[in-house]
Length: 395
Image (cartoon, rainbow, N blue to C red; front, side, top):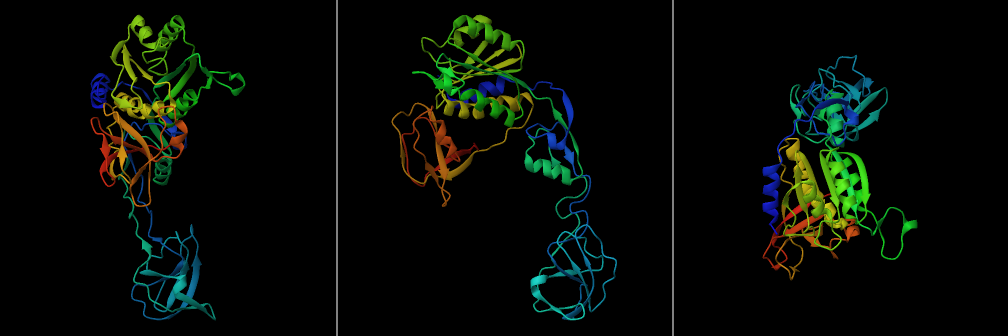
């Protein structure tokens, strides 16, 4: 059994960037994809001096409290009148500010008068104008190559005038679920059977992180069929992500199948809880990750290992997602041989509160958690207030 850091080091050493081709997509179709080129703004943001709130535009040195309203300018329109002392232009949030305006008086600091006039009843120290280029200048970098596209990135790219995006082709993945005990529908449940929740979860995780699932296969506990399935999968894909069958039990055939096919095994036991039987092997330039059959372990180890491998394949710089936060309560454990990831919630005081966790099959607890805090090997107890590493993982 190797340590978690040793497992990370092996992945870092064995997986090299692969020359995936690129393709061009509409920005709105690029969710979850990896950008292949730096993206720069096509113009200033804002593109003009913009009204930051609804109000009345006045010249910079206006001293009058009663002003004549020249016109009203809505968002998307421009002023046609010229401001002078004693005049104002009624303007809405987001509209271009008249070129001779020095500030905007918010509506709530004014009162309407007869004959299309307005009175300023209080002064505002803010100018309430968002200057051109305040957020971004033309040519500023928006998104670096190697970034995964999310909803905010899509909005930012479109705002900056970018409608198409060059992205990497998605690495292809085959998902394999093993075990006589798993079924796909509740109508097939019999004593001793369980629902196959790993397959749909892995499908969703791959979709979320820019991997293309080309097949999802369920394999019973059969040695010859396991060999056949793994051999065929290795000829068709970049990645195999497998759940179950990787422990040391009598009916766990995955390790022997890998050996028969000729996979190079790099590790198959990690001092990690949950996820001890996690397996990593290669076959030519193909990768296989054998994950535990228990869904909470599958969820965690996918994030720890599969996504790490994906970053190396696409030559994406590693992002340090870990935070240092205090524990909200004392924590003790008996077995100190493994690095342990504990589901927890972030409380209103900024502390991490461990959740009741029944082990690696307890998937529903992850619906409640904000992520995992980490207790390192050889540590038996932590006190409230001790700072720990926290891995935020959204579910």
